[in-house]
Length: 85
Image 1: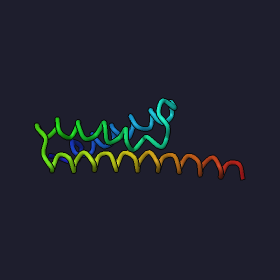
Image 2: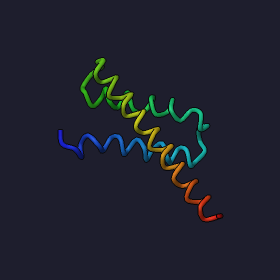
Image 3: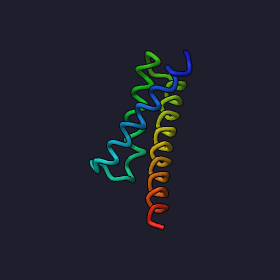
């Protein structure tokens, strides 16, 4: 697979998680659980079946998605704090 095909699921998951977080539909503490619930079945579908490798890919997608959402949150909060000072 090329870089774009490997990167797209991760970016898509990050966008969905950020939208869920902003909507307030789910507690922020449950965002990692939501990421796992979304990413692992997607990885199974992408791999064509259930396997340990697909599980690890799904967990990787979830971890990267949650990290991206946290990074965006930190960046936006820091930027807003800098404007106040």
